[in-house]
Amino acid sequence: MTSLLLIALAIGQPDPAREAVNTTVETARKRDWSAYAKSLAPDDLKSFRADWVPLLEGLKKAEADNQKGFLEMFPGVKDVDGVLKLRPEEFLAKIMAGTDKGQLFRGPQTEKTEVLGIVSEGDGQSHVVVRATRKWADKEHSVVEVMTVRKVNGAWKTELPQVLKQLGVAMRASYSAKPGTATAKDEAKPEPPLPKK
Image (cartoon, rainbow, N blue to C red; front, top):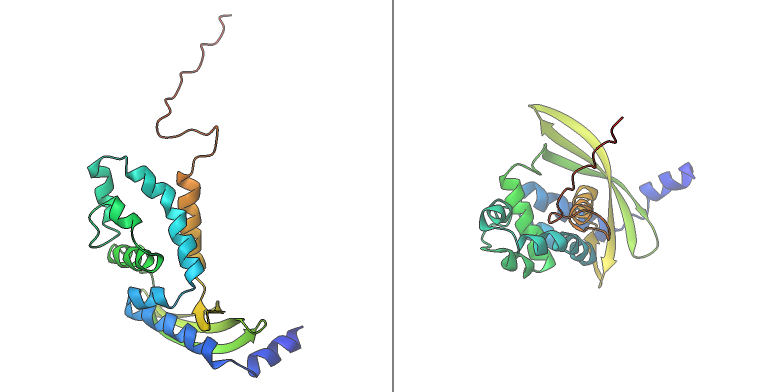
């Protein structure tokens, strides 16, 4: 298995997959969030936006002061209805621009990347092994990551990073109340008094 993996990394590397990853990495490095969003898989963007809808619908009922802080994550959008009208690409680009300004996703700055190899999985999907050199606290750190790209309508697109997928899932889990669970409107009931001895 290891030998086959090494062979796959060494030969037959599809240029479109490499180019797709390079585009995603470079647009993120430049913080060109509109171009970054366009480099990602459309179905991932759609799912990411959908994960936020329960929160957005809840915020429509909240007071203006409670909406203000949230709306800062979406530069140029005036209200929650405006956020809900954003297309998936626009939604991610806005939230990345807004949270980047607030330092939420900034983290270490990527200085350079190097594609180490590509493992193809059929004709429509590849896993690209990338070494990223990042600067953090005035020191350079090297990490190796795997980025998955797949062909969508004839074009190669990068999958949404796991950190963003997890953020979307967390939003859905936090704001989608299941039947029988407490909601913000529920009132706490006092515990019944202990029986007298």
